[in-house]
Length: 353
Image (cartoon, rainbow, N blue to C red; front, side):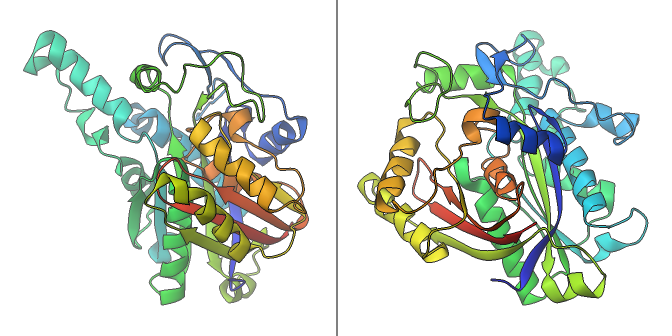
């Protein structure tokens, strides 16, 4: 897959906005969590508390966006600037967008339904309703930046960003677009804490800790990646952050087959030991067991870093894993995408700069 390269990266995560903040956080290995404010829920989580979209999102549009779409807008603006794509130059005419989310539309749905239940039909706000669908963020980005290529929104729990990246790669190879924006996004909101608690995800004790099997961390944020063909990047003089070495997916219908599926995906994407490894463990036993089995199956691989335990699970439905693999120079990095349902993913970035 070395015909495709990453030329732009934008990051909005709990430790702060931008690549440098994410890199420093990953290097420190310190979880970023605190008691959530009432406006975002209850319990502990990783919130983008320092996020400030001033100067990036116009005030009129800012009022109409849900929390996740605001993160995605700022991350996309960072990625375009990083890729050397200047506003007003018409790059959107040939750009596709592949978005991924786990909770997209849910924040707006709660904000729309609660007043309806409390006050009746007159309490339902028509201003909120357009954001109640998961693909609202992709629509907002297309309008904001004039993106006129194909568009998709993937909802695949912990690994939606891997599926979005796969779709973007297919479009580029088929010639449906010349550039692709891959963006993963999610935002915290009150009902999310209730859902996670009722599902048993928060029924553990202690703060997030690697390999502890406890401490599922709700999080939020967005990651944006500009992907294009290597020849096109060279033609416009763009710097390549990394090459897409391989991206592999294996399906497993039965839970007992998921371990083998993840190991097979990792082995195909990266047959040899990589220089670095990013793991997808998150405090959920079903996911952590898969990561533990992968570590046993590939003993020569370096110790994995687990950004979900630092930045939270919902920070872009796995997009934080893609970003973590692009933050430090190395020859190759294996990014594993374990999932609590059928699909298991693995990715190899090459020549990370």
